[in-house]
Image 1 (tube, rainbow, N blue to C red):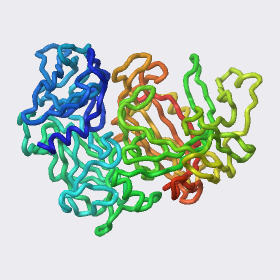
Image 2 (image 1 turned 30 degrees about the vertical axis):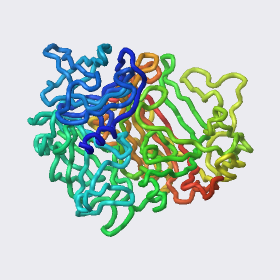
Image 3 (image 1 turned 90 degrees about the vertical axis):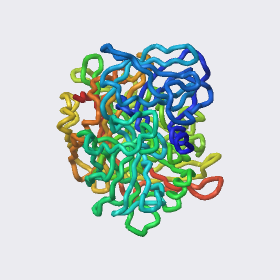
Image 4 (image 1 turned 45 degrees about the vertical axis):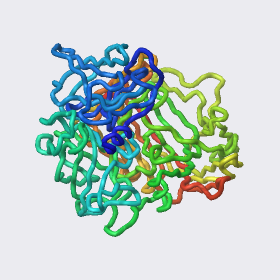
Length: 581
């Protein structure tokens, strides 16, 4: 019973005080995607949905009412309503199990707490929607994985698995079972009915078992043997294909040669990785020069906006932070050149509903930038006191260009922007970080040659998409970023989006990269715009450095020692609003 309660508590968060319940989102409990699979655990976000202190179901069978909270699913197309099984309840977040017998289709969901009932929230029930559970609990980063050959030891940076060993993954959403959902289901192997396959990097493996975890209702597990030709590293993507749909690419495994006590990472030391494993923090410094050509529709015209600047921060991060796609300071931990990673987030326009924020460190009130045509440019904390530094470069108006219309704003004089050459950023030190200087060589910027074409024509997700560019060096890394999101609650003024994002990487001198259909098929169809609350539809291509020396720096910490990792890099490229079809 203790493991049962602990497993569900790991999915939980606390909310606000009691009043009439409000539902703002209903998602898969593993990866926070919409579409609730039959027989799976799901999470409801909202307010006033339960007691101020979280209450978890104490024993089996799992009830339909817990501490005054219950959830009712009413089919939109008609038919009998039913109450979901309750896993835990709190004011801000509730979890339940959807019965395997629930028919597929659209539902109006209401939540009742102590006699008060919420307005209906629309959600869909699907046969299967699988997501892997991560150590951070956000659905991204290192997966919750046990190495069966090592006494079910948890796979971590300091406990890597090796080819030939059996790994047990945990997730949610493989689909319905015949056993009751309110008691431990025993073995319920779904690898045949769900057509399950495991992809370690790009190596496909048939699982030994894929089905319910015998002791916990709604929880799935997948057992497989690490193949001999599996890629090795600290952040090897692991994906699961279920009924033809590939999911779970946002999670990773640590794999190494037999006998190695820790995985190998190009940026972080063994001590740093072990510190993350132990729940400790890393200190990082990350600054970037940015130059973006943004293609949007403006006042009925196709417009190009040139945006240039410099920004960054020092931060103390944990494993939970380092696995958050929004944390650009530590994104380097999850870069695997030549591969793609999928992230799923439920977020509003002010920040993610899931995942935490890093703790920023003070390095002084103002930094200084120098480079070609730029002399002692002030880079202040923006806003003041935020410990995050930024400044605008180039044309302060954004260099807006609309065909047939004059550009710019009278009286505004552009300054030097990002160009080839050497840049330095330095700071005098602050209360937490001491004096530092970082130097960066910027090569000739790339040109995204088919940006206009991709912005003008719908991108067919089932066909993949190819991006082409000129320029770029072997030491450059090209990041291809795409995002599609649909409304999942909130209001028109402050909508909540269920967003799927992919990040792929390639060498700069490849000059072409195809995002495969297996990745794009995981995006929802989207034509909306975040500006009017109708959705998210973005495609971007970025050039940055992958050199082991260019832009790397260190800085002293006033508490003692130095930062674990520092990088001054560049992000040059473009971003377009696109149509995902």
